[in-house]
Image (tube, rainbow, N blue to C red; front, side, top):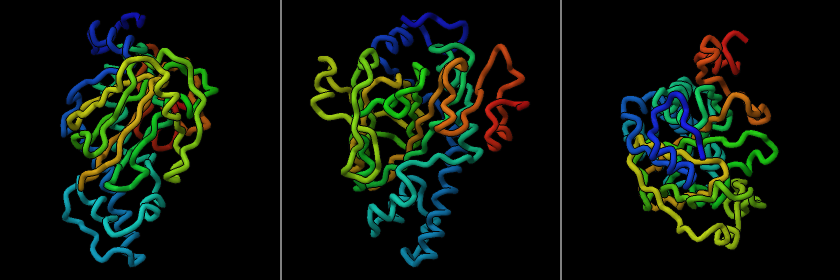
Length: 291
């Protein structure tokens, strides 16, 4: 059982649910205003992609006036999945808007309830633009820990946040409750989409307890927290919009910082507040201030 932390924003019932089920939904945790800096970072990337596609003659219109939720999908409407995958199935760029999101006090307050006030922002953070009818948008059943099986950081808490309403049409998250208490399963590299996702076979998923799969359609700004051993997946996007989301990760500062995956940063510390990384530190890939 998770012991109550000295700080944090979760109540006892929420903490108990997370401890038992391996995940927790915090509806509309972030306002549209709080999502704006990261959304601007996403828009910057989309504009860069549009410029490149236009320069190559692959599109005749950069669609600069189209809404955020539609523009990227419409840029690739007449192109191939391979054209899209040249830009990656997820983005991990150092744009200021992402730092501001990862440092948001509401997120850190929730995480603090689960792991305490010494919080390290894991280097594995992703922006995920799931565009319609591209197979790579569907993420197979997996455990996040399969990406760092030798790391001693347990748990790493994923915080998944949609930037548009996520539903079963555009490909919401699905969870297998309680599987965080199971061992890390032997995984394989998914070969159908060319994305290199780690994946599990259906029979493995079926052996992970009697609890049914839970689909999690949620409004934009909701935070879904889950343990890195918890089985999860997401379905294809069958809508006409982009299902924008981010997945952020946090862990105690005494765990492996996973430098092989990049440079994370000290996001909160009651013991050493002067060492919390600033935006300038993060942009320079310094894990702490003063290093």
